[in-house]
Amino acid sequence: MDKRKTSPYFLDTHLIDIHEVLPEEEEQEEGITEEENGKAEKRLNKPIKVREMKGSSQRRSINRQVSLETGFSVLRKESNRAKDENIGVNLPRSGRSFGGFDSINRFGMEGRKGDFSIFETKSSNPSRQNSWLPSKKERSEMESQKTDGAGLDESVDTSVPAGRYFAALRGPELDQVKDDEDILLPKDEQWPFLLRFPIGCFGICLGLSSQAVLWRALATSPATEFLHIPLFINLVLWLLALAVLFCVSFTYILKTLFYFEAVKREYFHPVRVNFFFAPWVVCMFLALGAPPTLFPNKLQPAIWCTFMLPYFLLELKIYGQWLSGGKRRLCKVANPSSHLSVVGNFVGAILAAKVGWKEPAKFLWAVGFAHYFVVFVTLYQRLPTSEALPRELHPVYSMFIAAPSAASMAWQNIYGDFNEVSRTCYFIALFLYISLVVRIKFFTGFRFSVAWWAYTFPMTTFSVATIKYAEEVPSVLTKGLAVTLSFMSSTTVSVLFVSTLLHAFVWHTLFPNDLAIAITKRRLGKFKKAYDIKRWTKQALTKNNIAAKVSDGGKEDRLYP
Image 1 (cartoon, one colour):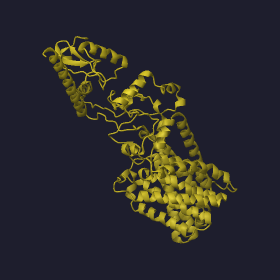
Image 2 (cartoon, one colour):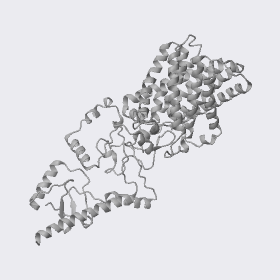
Image 3 (cartoon, one colour):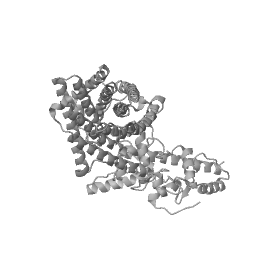
Image 4 (spheres, one colour):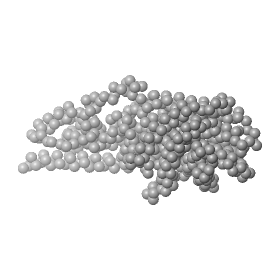
């Protein structure tokens, strides 16, 4: 039995092994135990060898001594030093707190500071490719974790359940981590730009491209010809929207190439998955708002096929998940942003009617209206067990008016008349718009987010629908309503555009760390307060004392039969 000299301080400290024991060490320890006790003991847990320390037979420790009191004793010293120096102790919740117990130090995670390789694409990180083949030691660690039931596989390759996002996140776009949750990446340092670039940036393109459509309608509609608006504004907005779309698409393609695991996390996000429809809706908006000076001829059907095919394939995937009744069924993942996956059907129907394909336009209108009705009812009739939308989520209510507005225009383009069906859809959108305007306080006092751009295109779409209605029912009231709504929409977009420029180039706060993609697959039990550490230490000391008493009792039984 190995003995070592210890100071009186260490005689009062109980030590416990908090590291994995390798198979070779297990065999050696079992052999020694057999020689001492004369028999082999079969144990379900990892073998624990109790040693007698010099100077006391009752004070024992476990091999590879690590003090149980290390965690909060160091914390106590730091607190005392902070009190003397009048400074606070800051323990950031960065995924690395209490290094021995956090999720980053589990198998499959990197615990080094500033290491973001867990979200990198496998092919872009050659050194990481070999790391996916676990060594013999790592395989043994995985087996021991499964046996003990304490190891959690937090690999970013596995999909995060939809309910986990609602449980761990909060905020307007489910982009803020709750206080009792931890993340896989450090919070106290800035992440790479591509990791901080969200899919919600396509909302900027939605706002600008829909404005190009609006100003083309204002310049060419008979209902607003008294304004004498030149087509030059439409041309400038169209070119600006095209440039922004190119920049955002190029940046997100780079993110897909270098951080594909982060893109997968955004795809599994119940809110952000709807923004994967946005690029194709933007392309269709640009086709509808194309300046006549640049494109005087009629649009070709190939344009519709190019933009609608990817949208339709993604639509089949998402609608299939809603219909299948699995973990991502509609009643579980529905949120106002789900309208983005519906409104594209009506925009595609408008574009199909423009290129002369009436039957595909009718098909898309039918599909869009059926799913809009289901989404509308699901969101409108919230179950008693569902939590009410927090105050930060109120701006997303503007998404309700996008689909009926686009549906009214799609029907008018298909059948050439703003008839009863078009007016019914338009009046639904009008009522929802009025119900939001009278609750203007819902949209005040929130932190700016780039995703807010996605809420501007419903206002613009409704403004365009009002212009079409004013063409069918010309009057001072309808024309005044069309001009007023167009002014409100353009003002909102202008304010957001200026705010975006200020946050991007002046305050440098447009792209904070994207915490939503770094949540853990399961909620981990972590030591958030000092008494949690003390309670864990007390329990471990009690178990250690019981083991020591049992061992001493066995020896006494052998000495005094």
